[in-house]
Amino acid sequence: MALHAAGEESGPAAIPGSLPAELETLERRMIENAVARADGVQTRAAELLGIGERALRYKMKKLGLKDTATLQE
Image 1 (tube, rainbow, N blue to C red):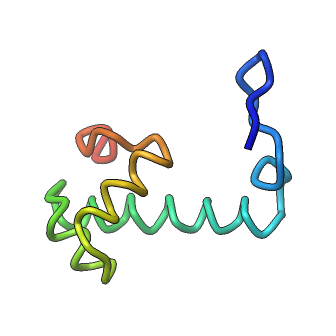
Image 2 (cartoon, rainbow, N blue to C red; image 1 turned 90 degrees about the vertical axis):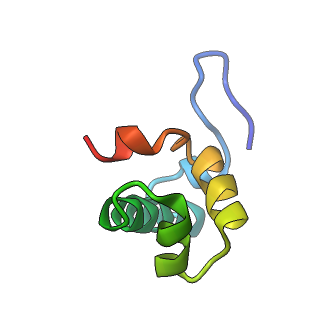
């Protein structure tokens, strides 16, 4: 996925309604929900999602969800 000079993403994930865009939206929503349910504890959030903690950290970084404190606001 490429970035334009203005910082806008291009490629399939940038097309609203495309499968990559919808999957990213769903993944973001599920991670935010799991982290909130786990009171910010990433290990527990990963367990709720059925993935490893390392995979959760990777996905959070990919989605720009680096700080769990920002998810609880």
